[in-house]
Length: 272
Image 1 (cartoon, rainbow, N blue to C red):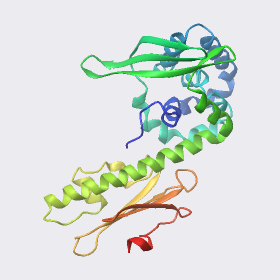
Image 2 (image 1 turned 90 degrees about the vertical axis):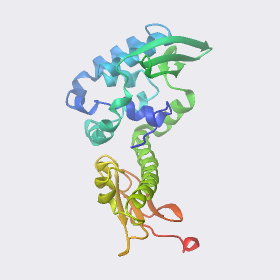
Image 3 (image 1 turned 135 degrees about the horizontal axis):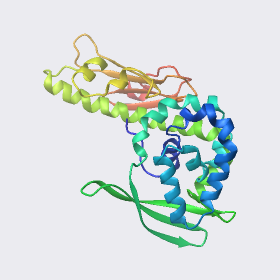
Image 4 (image 1 turned 180 degrees about the vertical axis):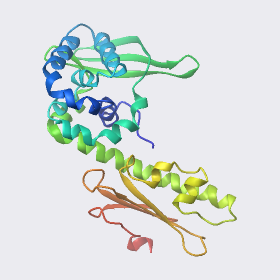
């Protein structure tokens, strides 16, 4: 899937969730201690110290500690173990976003805002330096920016569900664009005829998870007429209002989308 890997909060929110659901059973017992530990880590020093503690917590699987060092804290504190368990498929999708190794290369501070530069990856291979924004809140540095902090506080418990829906809808549209490219490649190899979804997967043009909805949150279908000289594609949320709201339709004219209550949509009148 093409989940965004930048530091916009939609991606950050999902990244911070990695492995947290696995600790849900001990959540109640450890909450007080973790909250204290995270507060201690946040107040320990400079923005670089906080980012170092944040990335270390992610690397070591102490994801709740990492969450409590970020602007996500108000949303995290309102989630139950049952809420967390529902996100497990999403957690699995983005485990690779948590770096296995990192190095702080510098920091810039301007009043109550700061940027820390983090180098991840290996020299000569996937090496990159990314800026991590922080703000000072009640005298404590936390990961994130003020706009996202305000949005998290505004949405509270609704923040994570809304971010998941937005991410799944974006991924669903991207996946349909991949179907479009796959059909072109398939037709070039098969005398101008198009394939159904399984044929595209079997040919290696599409990932196998498009055949189910466990990781995508969407149900995809591709239909071809008897002569297989054209195709149409649909994508509907597997669970309306949980994994997505928009339904998608694609044909040679492009992609159309609308909230249809989870039901399939067809070409609009202007496309007929």
